[in-house]
Image 1 (cartoon, rainbow, N blue to C red):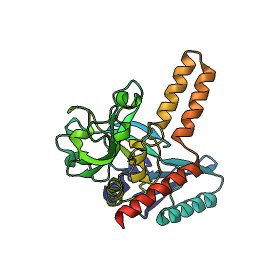
Image 2 (cartoon, one colour):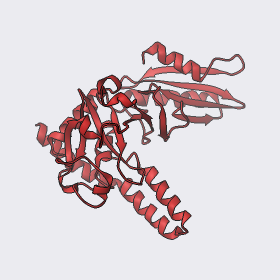
Image 3 (spheres, rainbow, N blue to C red):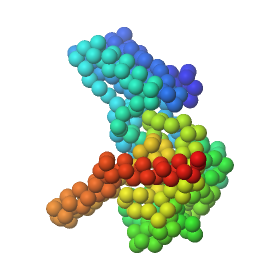
Image 4 (cartoon, rainbow, N blue to C red):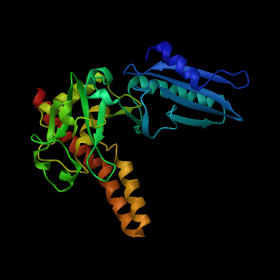
Length: 303
């Protein structure tokens, strides 16, 4: 949204009041994303709230992760107004430099049913999109929308990603980063598509698309597919936020833990959850080593 619309949106979330001290700091990050820090007096404390100009804000919300609520990304509490202001000034400078912190807040939003018919009407190049895998677990197939009906994703050449097939091991050796029409990204014509909105944009849309295309040219993920360590979600998140994570990771862990607890296998459930955590959020040293190898391939492909 434009600057005026964003200001009006912030005003709707934090309306001015004579009874409460409110100070707003409107700025733009290194990626030109608008954001606002709000400082408010709450009883004897001062609280700061971060609101960002998020894409697809008015699409129906499916779920959020690492967000304070449906409107605010984070809230911090301080004893004095000076502490609150110092924190805000520090964060503003960090955002201008492209230092966004180690948290990756995102919201998953539902796209209209006609999205597949007219994708450029409902999607923007650089959007991180997903659709359900055909399994009984909360898992998604994901990719990066490039515009003109094209999607970059990790997918077998002669099939479309399917949860049951991948769980059984079929097609994983043929999976690699590729570009397909959005009709091939889904399993069937009416399948709902969602957008993963990264609340803090670490890349411009153009940069996200460029990263996706470079990884496709480098045949990223060829013969390296792993359903938990190296899959389509790791590819999409790397393009969007420069880190390989699973957007469904927390959902999978919660599902396994709940199921194990329900049937009384607490010890097994805890062990499985621990193993899941190790593959969903791998060891930083190993992750860095893997990323360096892939970066070398990307660099060689573009040099």
